Length: 124
Image (cartoon, rainbow, N blue to C red):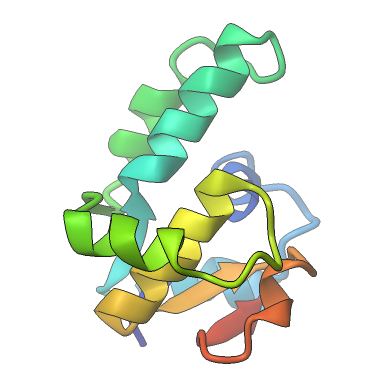
């Protein structure tokens, strides 16, 4: 299975938060194709600058976690821009677009993302 992790899923996984099921933790730990989007690193950096996330090295910890990096491309940007306005968060819209473009299953608990019926989802 090829997975793209929503930001909250990565944060729960890194902190071994019990909010994340053991099944999802095991998938993240064992699947070969588990991706982190450049949008997630950007989102984490912005939230840190606003004082909403710690520790200071969180973006580096995500990058060092051995998840596969998924850059943002013009095709992803165009797909995100053309999504129906069901979700207002630009970072989540990018993740939806990337999942669609790359044939990835988006792992999330975000109910707004679940309104998009043509993206493969796995509930975290």
